[in-house]
Image (cartoon, rainbow, N blue to C red; front, side, top):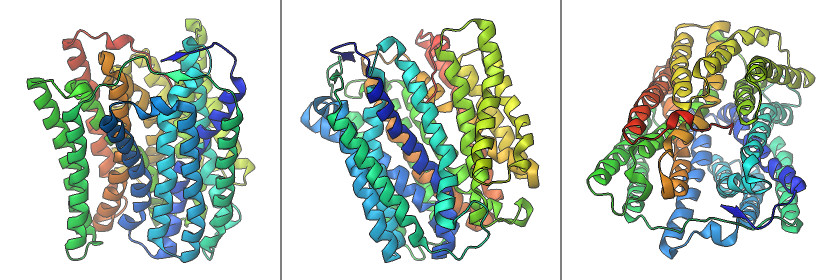
Length: 535
């Protein structure tokens, strides 16, 4: 990737960072909106999680559509229209989705609301694909990692304040106990969001920005294309089977179909890599086992990250976890997403050229500064945060993991994934504050997983690095499948016991961290010195 000119595009960067904020704002707010819709529409836990299916499924559909179009035309569409225009078009699609939410809410149709979420996220998919490399291009390429870290930190700020604002919009205050609230109260928020998306698109359109191009040529990968079509076909077939089977909405049917879809997706990817090893022609990036293992890891990671918080509202409704209504959980959802901000702010330290001693001090100080920001934002909004003051104990675990890993992505991922297994098991065996802290700390261990997985999965891909990155993005699909899978299991065995799903997810991520090191060592790839930046 190259820039035509080296200029200061500070104002453009700050505008772009707003886009990152709203990705986090909307995604995290689902944790409040899901239990609200569950109560309003009298949904099962599985049905309530379809919000995540619509939202994260759009990322897969959008990324896949972009890839298939580019493949059919023989050129990279996004590279042809430019990252600036790609971001603008993505924002305009999200405007349409936000405006669709208003008649959807007024109609009282849950299916229509799901469609609105899908269109908003479809725009986000295009924005994500364009905005990340665009942020690197808005300045000196040598400091591109710094700008991505800044954007990632602002994204995490959005995830922290989103649940608070959504609660105020829906219930009038963060401490409201009443559930007799009209869903139409959300209309004003989506009207504002549509206006903001349109405003940002307009600013982009009139702001002079660099023309960004991709240096490497476009290369077709017909076998990889067939693999994605097979995944899509399998998902469509399972959905169709669900509608044809009796009692589609039943918990048992939904769990079986979703579990089968997870197995089928993983099986297709593993089979594709095995075939590529025998004959690499036409497979592109998918001939590398680290990428395929990483695609599964991204699928699992996103699914687990989203599922922990999406099902948390139902968990907090249990008497053993406080017996809270959907209007009383915003500070817990905010702390979960704030935990990701804590980890990402800490990770951002590594991209600056600091003395070892300074870096060590900041590794201890920055997490607690971020923790203080989360506490302060909630306190200003009227939330009683006293129950979460001692959560700082959990943060020390993240600090210890960073020191033990010594900036080595495979080691850091291994430690965090193992801690995730332990935390989820503690949560399963506990209730009250201990159990709640254990589940919320899932945000801490997930916080730095994305850049670790991403960096390891694309190591050694050479000219296929960009294609491999695009393939990894499609696996955000995990956020569409794993949360409703846990929701369906919750309908069968209870919401508390359903957190066995994150345990299994973190177990795979532990395996990936161990296995990918061996794979890369066999390829003579120096993965231990791979740079990891906050995302």
